[in-house]
Length: 123
Length: 106
Image 1 (cartoon, each protein chain N blue to C red):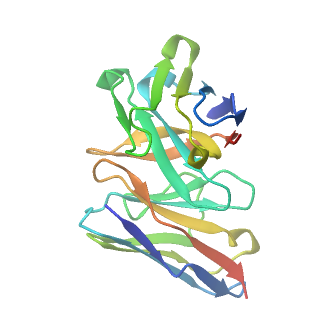
Image 2 (image 1 turned 135 degrees about the horizontal axis):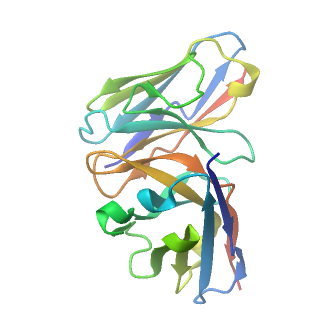
Image 3 (image 1 turned 180 degrees about the vertical axis):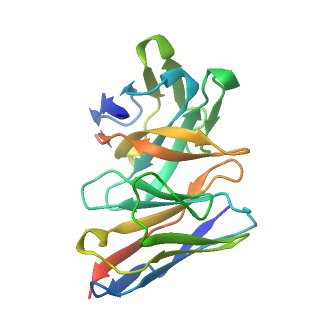
């Protein structure tokens, strides 16, 4: 069974950094893309970042709202993915989901979701 | 690409049919997925490629459309179907979701 578990969320002050982790099991982790999707309290879903699998050289994509501040990475030997979040803003407050990505011609859809970890950016 | 869902809220009685719409600001061919999110839960993939049901999704869920207009139909609403539904395009970068349609009990 595919399983994704996020960790690392918490309360952080604006301008500070936080690193989220995603631990995966139940599938050949290196072959799949991993993405982070966030959801602000009471709001809809927002795609944040994606890292492709080893067949696609682990290349990355970012939403404009986080480009230059967030960095997605992966360690296939640990079946884990990460989201390094720097220069955090109050508007980054959200539940962050780690999700497995399935490729289409260009983009990806998302077939297995973790339960999410809450990040609160506040002074 | 901007994804627009309508209506924002849909009030339906159990056993009735629910029809949800999703519109893309430009053609996305059939690169569209639908997700269901129950309260307090992570989203779940329902439909991909506009009309293909994901694994273990009941047949009462069906998707249709291509280009810019898409529809998710729930043929006979069950109690567990009252939730928020999101569409997502994956035609190009950046990926994006619609704002969601909340299906509530009438």
